[in-house]
Length: 310
Image 1 (cartoon, rainbow, N blue to C red):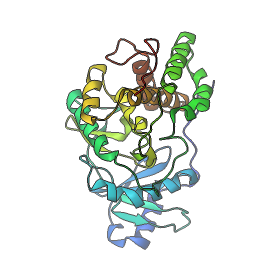
Image 2 (tube, rainbow, N blue to C red; image 1 turned 90 degrees about the vertical axis):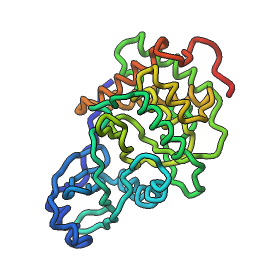
Image 3 (cartoon, rainbow, N blue to C red; image 1 turned 120 degrees about the horizontal axis):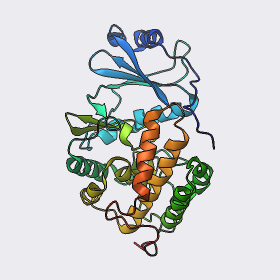
Image 4 (cartoon, one colour; image 1 turned 30 degrees about the vertical axis):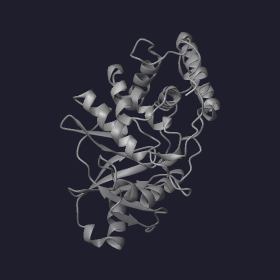
């Protein structure tokens, strides 16, 4: 199976365009230095002076994600225990640029995918407490998502298509056993809760050794909290996952099994789309190794009995 590249940009975003948009819509910011920091899957991110970033969608599929952040993130940020990049200014289409865009605070630090927390236990507790606050029941008009927050079995077709990314047949067989085990766990029966939707080490900031902020809420949605709890396998060494679960406080056994299944599914996504991203490949490989290691901690393995009933 071929490994895919980051989707191509559908519009060209340059510092000149950003300055023109700011001049038209937020002239008090237009004189600040502008430096392109990243061209991600969904957004171009520019540093704006010392205190802000500008985030602009680079393809139509991600334009609605920025609108969701603008609508909901300022409201959610008020009760979250870690900083998040809630928009402080909203931009409109203009100068040939077709979508809404945002000015957000600059949050210092390095992504956890490059600089892991110095104290994994403290990070586990901070992240568990963050998600316990985020996962409040969501309103009926919360944004939907076709692939996150859904029943885990709804990911089966995508997972089966990506499974050939694993070249080792023994590893493929182990992944398939784990998937069957995880999808046999009872589905989420509670109310849909708010979800980050894309919580992984490249969307977590570490500053001075401590987990300091949570980034990129473009996939914000509502549904099964197990989607976000998958970060336990994506970020934390095995001995600290129990601390994360304790700090979260309400993950029953079935939810924890589904979370491990979500981690498997996301590991395959990262591995299947890493042709031009060594960072993404490392996240995918680390996560795959974590979810398939039956001796890595207290996680119940897929062949150690029936799936929990809750």
